[in-house]
Length: 209
Image 1: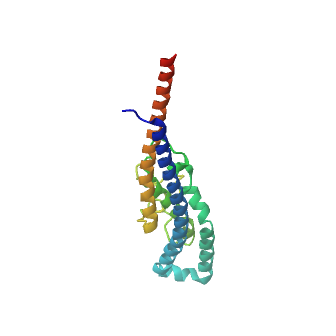
Image 2: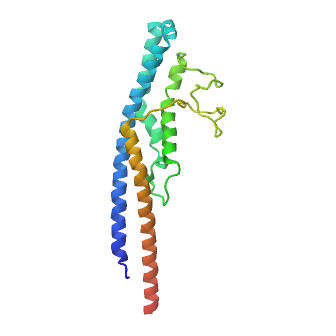
Image 3: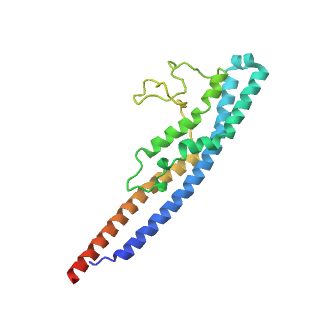
């Protein structure tokens, strides 16, 4: 059966363009949703600590709590930059480079990025005594080593507890993961079609010579 390679190439190019276009939309929406989510999360976790650790809160008093609020507000203002630092890099998003393979551990890497983003609250809470600064404590807000046993000396602030993403964030990242698999298939097939077409054209020229 004769294959119209030009037509097949055109179809795959369109599929790939459409897939990448949707991935770009998800990327933009995910960053916006995550920025909103994290801003609220910083406030919610801080308020939970203040209302739970009542003795510490009363000991701090109004002046110290005002300083805590100010530090929290400054952190919230920096949220867009923090999101870009950890969840906006080219390496995190397949459509930015379009390799011919999926990004390994995409969902796991995104989970780590979000925990690092959440971990930016650690210095604020540590400053006022609401979370431990002792590396030996299991609730210490720092990265673990690759064995998950110790905190390396240069460990970055990291949220160690259960982290609930918003439902919208979860839906978007699941869709992106599926689109990435589709995109890789289109990219690989497109490369195969172009190579086959080029080889056949070369053979045709040889046969005509």
